[in-house]
Image 1: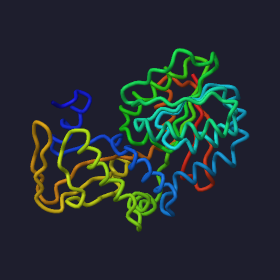
Image 2 (image 1 turned 30 degrees about the vertical axis):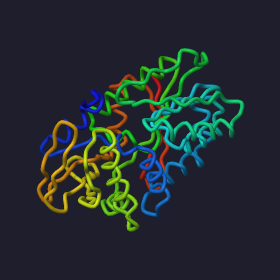
Image 3 (image 1 turned 180 degrees about the horizontal axis):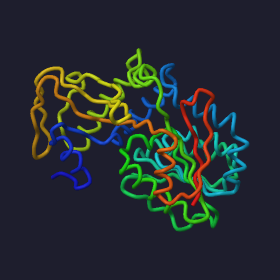
Length: 305
């Protein structure tokens, strides 16, 4: 019998066109593949954001303050949290991720690096709401959402998520968030379709994860990776495209995909900074300050109620 929490997968696969949430990329192998993507020469967001944190770190630290409870949804490897922890010395770190085992190892490493900090791992899905432990320190909360992950959500979805973060931050906290800005299409498309094919592996790996979750029989070799910029929506789209006629079964159902038919696996919206600040205001963040790289490719934004 299908677990209710996985019903959304079957519902998405049954649509025309089919789609699945990008959160299912992040099983243990998917998380490791994504870390490999961040090291690729074509994938600029991670190193550009890191450069902003390094160059503007002292200003960012003064803006957000020290001694907070740092909450990172989608923490993954905690590599970016480690940079921020070195800048602001939080009292407590709570990493939240759908890939709980991978997260637990990462938080252990982070705690060993910052022994004075209370470091905790929390398995969870930000899209379903985060329920924090009751015994967190009574300190202002800083929600940290780097890497332009907010771009995975369309504007209404992004607004809903920002409102969740506003609730997590409470009235005395804030949000530190990374956003990928619009830029040359060739740069964007190369970042999501690298020459080594690591992003293609990452995209197809989601099928193995689905097989475990819903008992499906996807074969990765039946699908090719597609990534392109959609100018009307200002977003990169990733899809899996059937190489030939494919019949896929899962517990209680299945469907046939025609050759060339696609499963939409990810969007990555590229929000202009002013448009994103409008979303922040709608979510209840009255003040926002941004730091950008010299090329204007990426921004780190600190928002407060």
